[in-house]
Amino acid sequence: MDDSVPQGSSVVALAKLHGIGSVAICGVRVWLVLALLLCACTDDDTAGLLAGGRPYPQEPPQGQQVLLDPADIGGQRTLRLGVSPYANDEQTRRDLAPLVSFLSRVLGVPIELVTSTTYGALVSSTVDGDVDIAMLSPLSYVQARQLSPGIELAARAISQGSPEYSAYLVVRMNDPARSLGDLRGRRVAWVDPLSASGYLYPRRVLTSARLDPDRLFSQQKFFGTHDAALHAVINGEADVAAVASGALARACRPQDSGLANTVRVIHKCGRLPYDAVAVRTGLSRAAVAKIGWAFQAVSNRTEEGRRILAGTWAISGWLPADDSVYDGVRSHLRQVPALVAPVALAELASEATDGR
Image (tube, rainbow, N blue to C red; front, top):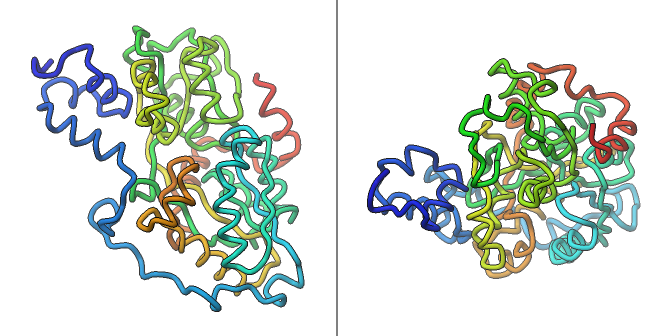
């Protein structure tokens, strides 16, 4: 351990939390650790560059070009926006109210927010046409497209200037476990059967290490959201949780500063693209384009964008996207084809909150 980094310091705790790992903790100068943490905790993309120094795409059309014509949406008077269960219904509605208001204004059509209790419920609503626009997790999007190939991708989210995030397995800070094998007999908190970072990617990591999750863990339970899975570990309901890196971003918020000293990353399970903005089968290509432009107009590079995004789960904007960016998720799914079959989604939706 570098003597310049005190073992019990908040720097070490937060470095471990953000997965900087043993290399960053053992032998890397403290200025590098601090630099990484400052990068992780900032949400100001005003430099106009994406991760890796890439420039942002050209600004999308604005004004009259984005307004939806009645013909674009088959004469509908409102559009329904479905969202994954990142938090409870009340908090989700409060956090996304500025975004809903902005989309309603720029599209010229009232947007109605529809919250879902499970990932599967939102996939079902998207496939069945009960929502017109859906902010789908990567695996949910892949499943929805498999069930309804006419679903169109309008945009994909970014955070901290990056179009990708990480899947983590986390344990309490004082847990003696240091490897995946050390998790034997522990209780695991999954997010949802249709969560890539909260289920699919960590399970594939375990099976690739020849560790059968059904035998490795003494108990498995779905908690429905990343926050709930993370707090299950913090509160002692579970010993290990599978969560997205964004769920740990709250450690950088003053009101949750104690979280940095509570949990740590025991294994990184891969990177994957952020959530998709998908449009149901049947809406016109013009509608898909305009909905995409409306989302892409929101960015934390502007004062208005920062206000709109302040309550979201660390989203800093949206980018144009091609369906191929989710091929990595499809590859993971092919490796474990029986894990999440794209059938009986109603049953999957009801079972997700029951645990197993």
